Image (cartoon, rainbow, N blue to C red; front, side, top):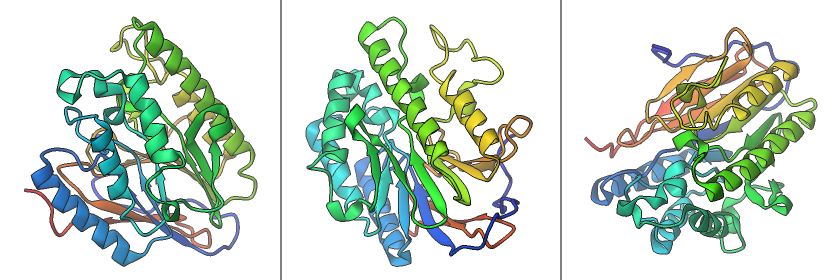
Length: 310
């Protein structure tokens, strides 16, 4: 089992003293029967607000795979994110658009749903301006406003639009292929640029949805997907960027709904750690403290939900 048995600090040597920052990571929620999951999700938001973190990261899948992908449903989820008092960084998951082609989800065109998602969550009509941290850099001019970068103090935060379901790569669908390669190229460029400007940051946090390690990209993509892995370039690019950076890199992701802390590339990028957040039905959060003055730059603590579904 690659999952850590318990939380532990990441043992890194800090380059310089700086003020610590605490933030909270969640994802793959709400997910399931709304009558069950929504009260629990709202209760978790209340707990998060009471803790008053500097930042909240949601790594996508705000809806279940078979839940409606309608305008109304997505707006409702955006509004729920708007209830979080702290600044929010959100990156989409596959349930939020790539899987909207499913009949149970409404048989939508995923590319059309992606355009709506960008408008609802990242455009002028997004959930709340108060929920967007400043100063926040977006890859908006290239058409990918969901790829963001923020440095509130000693840590550089980066979001990348990389989703489960093989990152939306469907080799037999020309429209899906075109979308995939454009989004992949943008993510690769944003990743390279972000590490280039990291400078004296004590550490980098990269947030995305997919569990790339479960799909396999090292040393070669697994043959699970027709036409190859949708992570065959972005995975190694993150590995190489982390190794070249040399300082702590924390990847926060979801997709598997199984909480865990791991060093998945311990031989090729030993400074890269991966945190998979809780996911429905385990609707908890993870509080992360980054303190460059400590030997353990990152430390972790679960935030247990008082209204956890059973």
